[in-house]
Image (cartoon, rainbow, N blue to C red; front, side, top):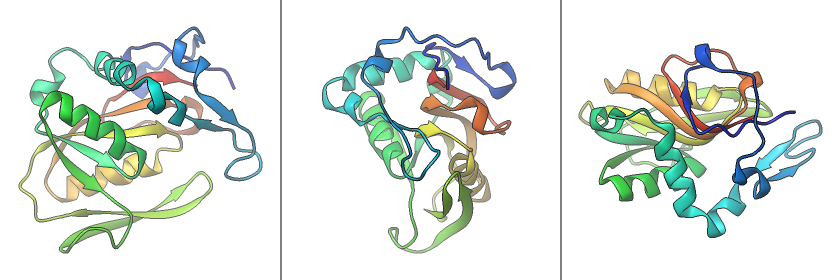
Amino acid sequence: MSTNAAATSATNNETSHVLNTDHPFWQIIRTVPDFPKSGIDFYDITPLLRSHVDAVIDALLTALPEGLMDEVDCLGAVEARGFVFASMLAGRLGKGMILLRKPGKLPPPVANKAYALEYGKDTLEMQNNLPPERVLLVDDILATGGTLTTAYELCQSADHTVVGALVLLDLVDLHGEFPVPVYTVLKA
């Protein structure tokens, strides 16, 4: 699979398959073959979190169009590594967060939705008694799109307005069009 490291924003409609492997993050990200099951190459981004946190947050912010954060009330943090990125961004920007979690982790009332992963099934929950806000979803990797689509649908069902999604790595060939713009640092 080829990789892209352009620090630009794009919706799936605008995604270019001209890939660039020059971004320094690709020297840090580890590819783990056949994990979590045979035939899947897992991109381990956790080495970026050991000693490159500021650079990662800077790159995520650079991927967003100018002025977008002025339209965002809070970040929709998708479990689990989306919590990490959303927390760092929230701290830097002074924004709040809405948590999208695995079942049984949030106090009621919650809304939940099951979805398919590239290697199984899962469910997300979010509190559904929060006031409506403009939300930027944040996760680590966009693969098949099941998790982010579910996060989007849960936010919409709770009367939040999702203005976009921000991910570190977009695996562009694994998913279709997303209902809002997806902003990314790396593409593969």
